[in-house]
Length: 445
Image 1 (cartoon, one colour):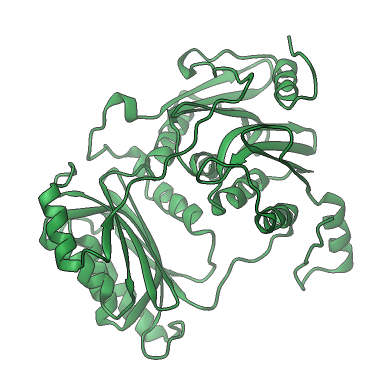
Image 2: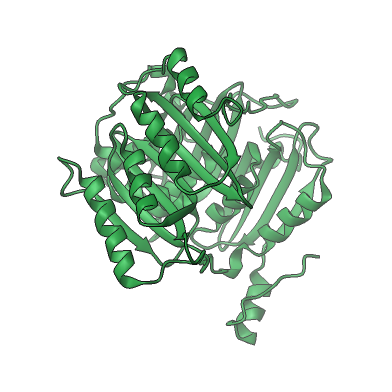
């Protein structure tokens, strides 16, 4: 039994209610030959599915299959997961941490941190923008401890966690914060983004990647035309149909499988105030098939063609934001002042554009990841990449391939229906199919 830690502000009655509604977690390595089964039973509330998926993705677990079913005020999630290498979970420490984390997702633990100052930036992307941002922060004596940068449809969103270089503490001086915000806003505005560039300091720190989705959603990136035109095979296919008899809207997503895909889709549905009542996620080779039966938080399905199109656009955007375009470069070196400003300036001077970035520091070591293209968004020239590596340091900056997601097909797994011809099954059939896949009944015919 997992021993739960409660926030100090909860009174005894609230603790009792939480214990009554606490998720029941089962982690089993015997049911499936190729994956670890993670089952979560819990009282249903808005957002709890996202929190469960978030726990799995934060541990870099690959979700091979998943079944979501809600009955009244209770819901059941079953996930078939592997580690990033495609293996079952065998480390008891990881299993115990996973079990404890899933058993306490309902506690509403605060994610705020007083260790850093969080800067939120959105604006029009352009070559060299990240270099200008990091140059301003270096000039203002801000040490970047962690950062994530996404670009999509010509827009950029970034969460940057900084501290004062001199005091090694968060920046609390109001005048300095105003200076930082003003300078960064001017950089983001450039020559043609006066209306939409935004810079702010966030006091309530939330999950970084969820916040990036929220920032891009608020920036309405999904309405903008793609700067780069990708082939049809790379574009996610999303369909939305209403199942009038049961009062559901049925959402199907088919796209290339990748890490954190389910998190990105569920995050967007949750932030658009939709509730997932039932769902099935399967993978075949390198393709993922996701099917959700959703309603608004008030219990109603999608009610207009305009809303249907908006859901399609937003879900396509949620998949595309994390899609990695360009060469993946990993920088591992001793941290020092102006490191990020110098590295990104070298990228800019050699005509490389950063399409996505993840920055972190551990002790005195900088661990940074960049995806880069040429200035036109096409593949960067190999000679240019080599030249940049020579200037920054061949041993420090390396070209890395994306980790492969294991796509082993389990015995008895069925090919998911194509999204274009999705069939609206009866609710009883959906539940019987899920029970069959879990091995709890012999047939669902």
